[in-house]
Image (cartoon, rainbow, N blue to C red; front, side, top):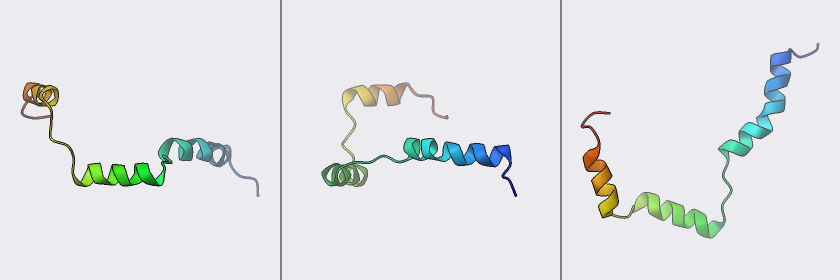
Length: 58
């Protein structure tokens, strides 16, 4: 039974979707990313200024 056009399009698009969703990094970079997620740096003056300018509700 032939596949529908939509199914074929999704199948053909999957490699592009995977490439956009998957980021490959070295082991060193991966450890650095995890470290930053677990212990983010304190906000600098520029970031504090931007945060202060945000509305109280988003």
